[in-house]
Length: 320
Image 1 (spheres, helix red, strand yellow):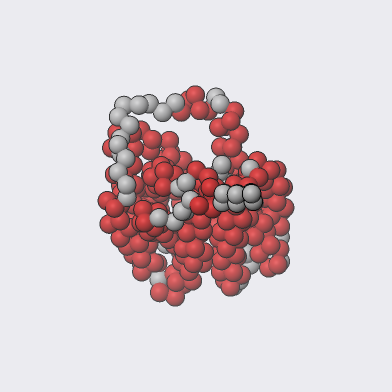
Image 2 (image 1 turned 120 degrees about the horizontal axis):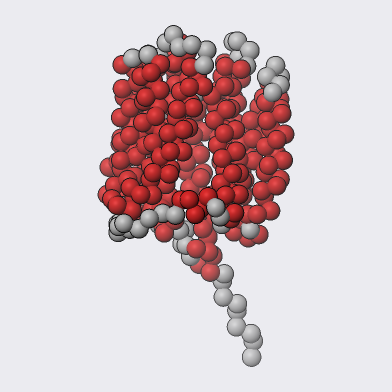
């Protein structure tokens, strides 16, 4: 009697892309495009509006600080109001301030709006992730999160260089309005996401988490990734020689392109072999990329450095 054919692996039989996941992709695209369209534009706007020399660092620093603070705050809000409400609030806080950006070029006004947008972006990250993970089959979770990384990376790929290019041609106002509209329009899709019951008064053990090595170590790695990315997108347009706007556009295109491709490859690798093997090579690649970016007089070094840093960042953020 012939042997029965072996069953197909569960990871292949489990559907990855579902209707709720496609709905979630809309809010991912809206948040990502809104955020990255202004990421390199706002520092330039602050400088050209009469800001002092550290205006670029202040605006991006405010955005990053508010994002970190918002990440710490979001679990409590989500536990009380639910992830859908928190995601909708995040999209509103990300989009509405962008519409107000052209009203004033005063540095304090710009920094205040960056603070609000940073909190909103944090809400979309944390609440959005909580809504996303249950939509993915456990056997293909790494691949699914990598796929969503691609979904978020495509608008980043377009928006990061497009924002700088459009600002130089049509002005900062239209770019800000477009960024605001993208986030606000995505709110309409939130009610279609699967409902999750709020967790009530359950407290998140944040202090305990900081004492847990299994959480602190990947958090430190992720923090290094975020810091390096923030430095690149903020100061690269200011660090390259004057008149090298085409180099900036190419580098800001390569950054999300390399990140998107590396995230997809790392996600597939993580499902098959585990993501831990990618951490040390990712850190080494990040160091090489950072050193290359110091050679701002060389276009080849700048583009290669951006590609290395982005690929390393994506590989180190691959979840299990």
